[in-house]
Amino acid sequence: MPQRLDAVLEAIYAAFGIGWDDMAGVDQRGRDLAEEAIWLGRVLLQLMPRDAEVRGLLALMLHCEARRQARRGPDGRYIPLLEQDSQQWSLPLIKEAEGHLAEAASRGRTGRFQLEAAIQSVHAERARSGGIQWNAIMMFYEQLIRISPTLGTRTGYAAAVAEAKGAEAGLAALDGIDPDDISAYQPYWAVRAHLLQRLGKTPEALDAFDRAIGLTEDPAVRQFLLQKRG
Image (cartoon, rainbow, N blue to C red; front, side, top):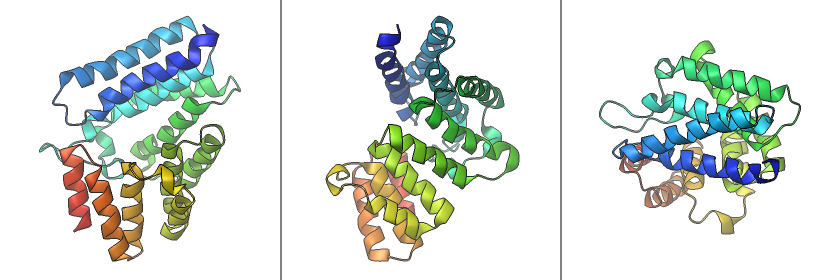
């Protein structure tokens, strides 16, 4: 099993991602797929209870699932993570996720899923403290980039840098990404638009918003970006 583990972890996370992306909840199959992925994560943990990355993946999925109800308003409006009402998050799921993450950390073998779960853990702390430790998130992203320098990781790092050090620093981090990689990557353009808007660079912000809106498939997210664009 250890030789096949990486592929299995990726497959389970991909299944969860498909279900998670159905934010509107119009297709019950999406919700079912996310729940199935979590169930598979629990089964895998029973088979390999000492593997840190198995616990890391389960912790990551549970942290995300804990926020499902807060991602949309009663009218279906998209609510980004930083604007969500943390009182709507599932504390039992967060507690379970934290337990798995702590056990994974005790194994002394840090991996991608543990780091991604650690980032979500810092966000989850807002439910208790009311604040977010952006320097901690930035640090976890730095570690994650070293082992998994994906486009999503680098974009997330830039967003964290912007919160920890200011919009100029975040934009500089975005500018360090290869332009050939970002032409069709919606999160990059959404983050870029937000940072340019914060810096008062209106023409450039409008162009970035247009790119992000054009790449957005979810109608509620598109409406959210249109409202931010102004």
